[in-house]
Image (tube, rainbow, N blue to C red; front, side, top):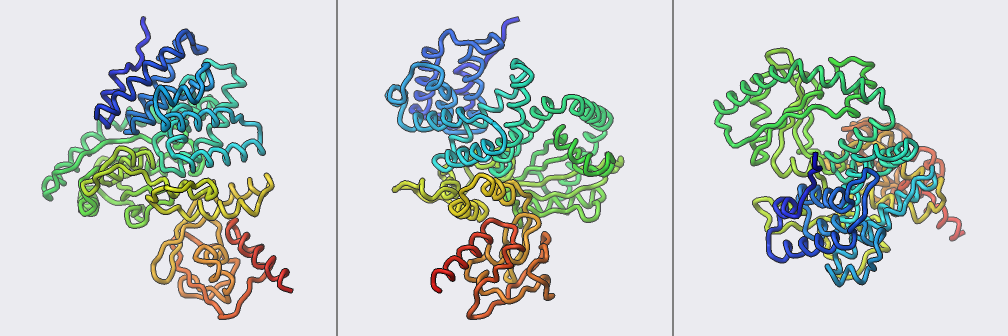
Length: 504
């Protein structure tokens, strides 16, 4: 049977940019790629260009990436695997495509070799991201297809590739809000790293889906009827079964109790505006029985990676536990593709698909070039980690900073005025004070958590209201560094004491 591959027509059909210039760029990239990769094959014996490069480009077109990214997807291995020079690539395509391809080529040279190389890989990944977010997006989808075809490698290579993907690429995908590719990569890695556990978990999922799918379909009909009776007709629904890896981890946390996994099945209700999100929440609770304590408003309080949605877990008429996720179309695209969604998704109030890459670029301020258009603020966690990196040159310390700030689970804590401060779980009042401003941290004299006096070392919890008391003339106590969890707070305390020593 002849193997089917994605064609030029498939890619052009998927593209969101349908102007003549964009289409011509893809056509040139296709023609050039076919020529320079002619005769090359993968380990599977398949033609390299048609099997891997065309697939990567199709994935990028499918999520709405711009023409330059798709062209780079077609040519991302050209500099490494052919005699083509960067200058030739620019001449055939343009400077933009060359820049992305060069960035992806640099990332391709990173090899996972334990702790120090892991940290260095993370640093280089983020440097490339700071230069142009499209580099990491192209690399992500290159890695996705490589993991999908990982079985053609020797077992040791399969394991190494899966480990590298799980420890480097998955965290990046999570922090960039790229939920779909994160889940896909997790499952592919899990299948390689723990094949027996993967099979057992997948078997449970298939069994539960088989048992409940038809009944769930009937339940959705009931909900649609209820929405119609309440005058809500502009919506669409889709169901999602939890990923194998995610389900395995949740089962582990729940000691194997499937009944306690409330989000095994998710029903997504996608609407036109935010007002309808809250209206639908009310209807859902009138049709089905809400499970106490399971309502999460990520619209009012988005996750640190930008995820927005209303969540509620309910018990249906037939006793099925379902997590309803209510969101607008824009929120849905963001939840699936994260920052990549901004390249192609346009809201009713938007006339351009400008990508908010400024917050990524600011991770490494020394890389910012003149003439950059600011399109968004950097998340505090990125800015703080960047600053910390300047003072923490050693691999061991930098790795600790990554673990504490970059990979850590996040929580939301509030100022007395209701401003949200994003901190890693386990952070203390010291971290909170320095997250607001270094001067607040330096002058801190006391702290109130939810209106009550508390010690500086008290670990904060998600949703706490925290008030920092200050005095006019204050300097940080050196002991505070023992209570600080974030690299940002530690850096400011160290710097303050360094300055104090200099002035004596």
